[in-house]
Length: 287
Image (cartoon, rainbow, N blue to C red; front, side, top):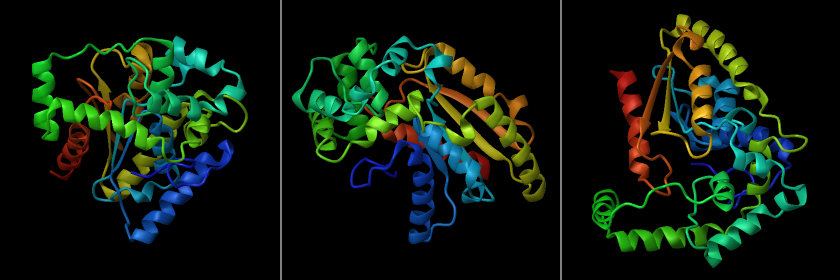
C-alpha cells in the first residue's frame, strides 16, 4: 500500500498534479525496490488511480498473469445520484480546504455512531446520514473478532478506535484534494484516462485485444462489490459500473469476473478477506 500525496509523510501537491505525481511515485518506488511486475488492487476512490496506472503503464502487470482487482469501484455522484455526495460537492471550497481538520477532530474527539472509514467519503456520508450498517449480535462479533483477528471483540474495538486517532496524528491534508478529485469539484480535477468510464473501457479493450494476441495472456479484471446496495455509489452506481465493464464491452483480451461479498469496508471486515479475493484471482489465472 502506498500513501497518496498529502497523507502520512508524503508531500502535498496541487490537486491538478495528484494523479501524475502518484504515477511517478509508483514507478520510482518499484524501481527502487527492484520490483518489475505487480498484481494491482484498489478500493473505492483508488479506482481512479488504479485505472490510470494500467492505462499509462500496462507493462507493470505480470506478463504471464496480468490481473487488476477493484473493490467497490468509485462512480461519480452525477451518475450514481447519491444525494449525500451531491451535498458534499456543493460545499464551499473554503470548507474543503479544512476538511481533513474537521474529520480529524471528529475522529480524535469522538462522536457517537461515527466510524473511521477506509476512504474520506465514508466520513462525508456519515456526517449527512446515519450509519446504515446493522449492529451484529455480541456472539457473532466475538466470533468474528476471534476468527479474523485472534483477539476479543473488546480489544478489536479498542484498536479500531485508536487507529483513527493515530491516523490523524500524521499529515492528512491530502484528504482535501482527494475529496475535490473524486467529486470533480473545481479546476484541475480531471480523472485523466478514466474521465469517462465507457470511453476508458473501449480504449482498454482495443489495447488488451492487441496485447493478448501477442502474449497469449488476457487481462483478468475482478470487480468486487458489497452485497446489496453499495453505501457510497448506491444500486444505480453499481449497475452503471457493471454495465461499463460487462464482458462484451471489454472484448476478447479481458476476462471479467464480478462478485459480491458481505462487507468490503476494512473498517468493518477483515483485510484478509479482501486480500484472499486478490489471491484467488491470481491463483485462478495461473491455473
